[in-house]
Amino acid sequence: MKTYEFKPKNICAQKITFALEEDVIHGVKFHGGCSGNAKGMANLLEGAKAGEAISRLEDITCQNRGTSCPAELAKALKEAIDAEIQ
Image 1 (cartoon, rainbow, N blue to C red):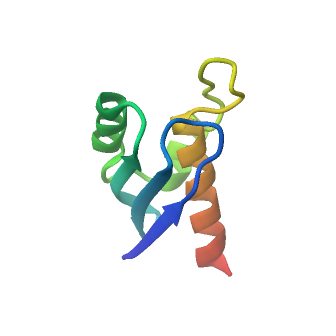
Image 2 (cartoon, rainbow, N blue to C red):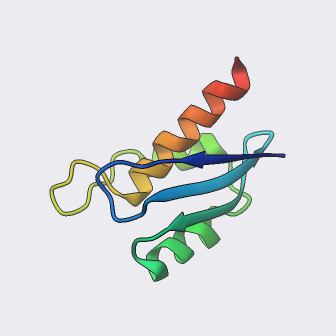
Image 3 (cartoon, one colour):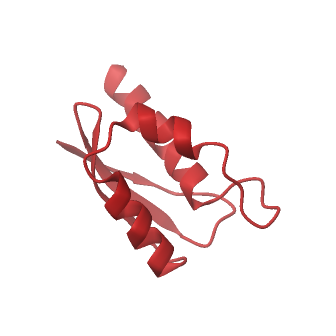
């Protein structure tokens, strides 16, 4: 299982960390931002397939920012998957 750290842009959280094990998400943590929403999202995604999570999260926006915590997590997951492929 490999752990990843992602620096999101244009959201309240300053960092997102998570682990992937064969396309399965573990231990999502948003550092900063809305604690309750972040913990809820982390609990819902524990054990989920990364590809499924990406398709559900990538188009969510928050307060006209053009992105959101879920969308930034989707970006982070895509980058992690790309890094594992290479």
